[in-house]
Length: 148
Image 1: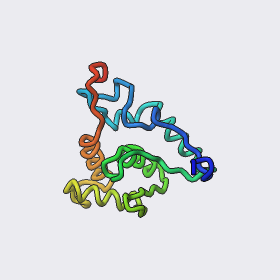
Image 2: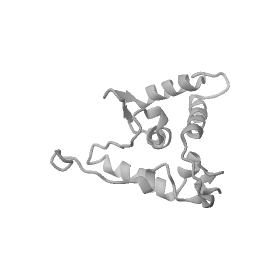
Image 3: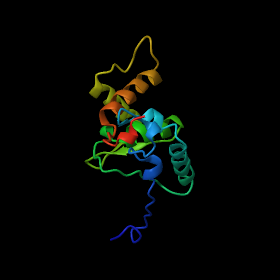
């Protein structure tokens, strides 16, 4: 059974929300920087498209990674949707759903970052975790033009 027969639609947003930006300003030493990518007009337009889409559709953001913590969907896209107040659930390899907050607790544990700190807010702690994980999983290019 195809997507249409199942009542599903597919919209490619890789240019807007993908982890392999063609914008050289999103790279440092050949590695994409999620914080820079998130500030681009293309990324912001992709988020806006998702926000408009949830009004009429149930949306799933797909990628090839089976573990949400090693995928840009979680570290880049879900982060910004969650920060905007959207409910985000990740589909795990076994088919179970995991709330984004639970995923973030797993990320902190995986990175051995304490979830509470006297000197940093939860948002600051999560920002550190996003940055560390983003550095680990970010796309690297050998293209010399992508080394802003």
